[in-house]
Length: 343
Image 1 (cartoon, one colour):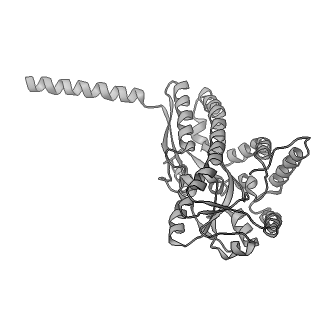
Image 2 (cartoon, rainbow, N blue to C red):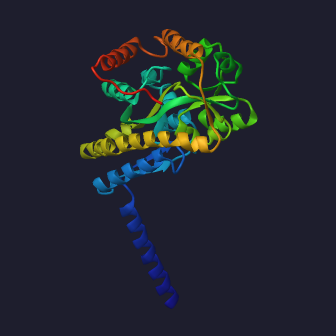
Image 3 (cartoon, rainbow, N blue to C red):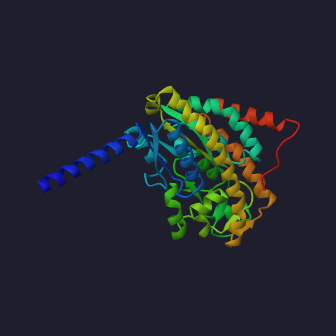
């Protein structure tokens, strides 16, 4: 009898624990993946966003995050979304633009000179971006930022000739970088982001492109210790959810997600920019050298950017999104006051 009583108590205890677990589990769980490493500002701020959504929906909406590329690169993440293994992700522009090509427009090399320009153009393009994502059954939640990116190499580069002689990396599936480097008479080595560090270490590539903070969190700066001190372009991404799963949420929960994003992702934007600014001194202290390039090289880089755009339209970029972007940029630059160029 004593044994039966003990077993009965154990059974009751297990039922109580299971009921508590069931009550605690969110009714709507979104499994989210990202290439951003755990502990980075991107993942930390996303966790703050997720916590607020969970609280505001009474625990009905939850997020499980898989950081650091454990679910593969952007293309792998998107494939897993399509079969229901994931329900969203923090995508790089390069990765998600294979699905939504017009999203890559702000990555045109040498397009922007200041963050003020970026912000003005971004706000003008957001309605179009959201529409393009919905056409692909994706819910656009927020645009994320990597920041202004720089060419970083294992050897000093001061001229276009030295850049051409270096083994340049290009993100796999990114026609902008590929066409731009080809226009510069460089045949790039195409690799996904998770493969870059090992390829730097082995010598397969010698020149990579990233933001200052990005190069630290991904540890690229430990090998690429020379930085061309002129922004190569602007890098960004998106936090997007599976549109069909998002549509199953009550409207109030959908609004809660967007409202929380409107609070937390601008905070993330500021933290990212602060991190990029602080990273310059960190890199200098760790032995990174910031290189100046000659005027000829600067001129060639700008000229080849225009040539690249002409090659991208209409197959990799619509004329409509390009024209809209250039009109917004012109509007900003024709204002009485403008921002200061990036250091």
